[in-house]
Image (tube, rainbow, N blue to C red):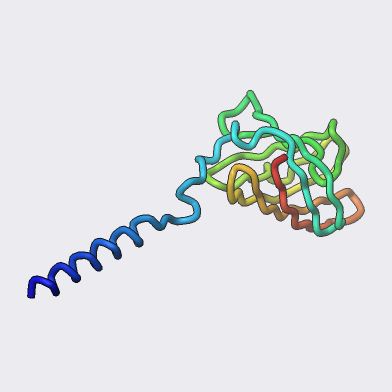
Length: 137
């Protein structure tokens, strides 16, 4: 009986060590903040099948908003406003950009370096929906 108990104890301890050392994939993900999102991002856009850069900056007039420059290749002088809530970056509803486009959509943030976006652009002639992957440089 003593040998059985020792073997059972060894197996129990080994099992505990194996399972307690495993962690979920997102345990080490930093909290998503506006600061963690600032910088230059590469965008791979499926609609246009193009790649371009956007710059994300903190909007100093708000506690939740960021500025996205050059969304949809609109130009580095064109900013889009987006609000951060948990892991969602949502473009202000029906935002009219400086170039006249109306934009709607949001991005789901997987990590401080990866976002998946769906947004629509109305350029006055056409309404086009895009899917894009943003990867931080």
